[in-house]
Image (cartoon, rainbow, N blue to C red; front, side, top):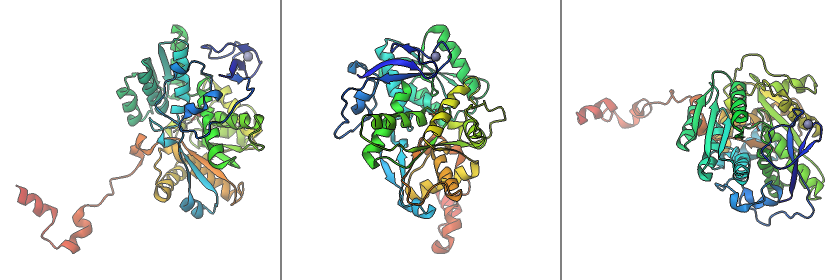
Length: 409
Ligand SMILES: *Cc1c(COP(=O)(O)O)cnc(C)c1O
Ligand SMILES: [Zn+2]
């Protein structure tokens, strides 16, 4: 392991690699490495092939479900429709629990094992809790999940079968976040919530950058759905490491995408602010995976915004109709079915094209973050036709379904 210490991104104070959530100054902690000589794996097959880049020293403590190494799909049909020559989908729906959250959780839960902790806590609208529960199950840890009111049934079902204790919190994602934080602090547990609270989990997100480098080199743009934004941050950190190690020269522009009905980070970007404010309006979007109002931890959003600016990227918001259009076109043209939050990047690509922000020959990667089966109520199936409505003329009257059912009587 080449990870050395935790460093506060604000005051630069250093801490050992222990169970710390925040710096005394309130700043976010990040893992800092001392890479002397590090090699990229020859033929990486799973996330842990990148062990040298991850903050775990005891290999025997790794809790893995063989996550990562997800395919990068060249979206030729969709690209053609959008007028893009080089559009790719990083298909994170293929991870063990159906979302990219398996990357941060395999690292965070392995670290919990290494630190000898027996209980993990997570606040989540679904994917993070489903994932944390699966890794906790594999690692024989207790898992307590705090869910907001808009959690999806399918994701809850996952967390439940994996054996998590599920606690409902009255309110939105931030309310669940704050409840989980209080309990974590009270009992000295370990919090794997997908914000910047756990400094180890974001390290798992870096592996997307290493894989992308392996698969297409350095993209011009990487589009990422963001709640608080550790996924975007992690991907950029991965590319920055590749650059500082001399593997690449350029960095991608990072595009953070949020739904119009809850977009605190994009709102700040649009006003060219450097501080993110919590979202105080009513949350109004079907993309429950990324509706994070950041109440009480808005500096998490500020850190994400800083990465967007540093990379010369963009913050783009997408309304629910465009989001659904993107979801359907990704499925219809490329055979990839995502949950609403998962394909919000497609809506953003369209917006960027019409706004003249991207050239048709740019190398664009859209990260598809969560599987479509995780939230099926957004897909309309009540318009499916009966057999006889469609085939009556072909079959004559004899095989009408009412006749069939009479025969069965
Ligand atoms: C968690 C999640 C995101 C956002 O990731 P953050 O790193 O928390 O900002 C995006 N899409 C889906 C499907 C998610 O579950
Ligand atoms: Zn500090």
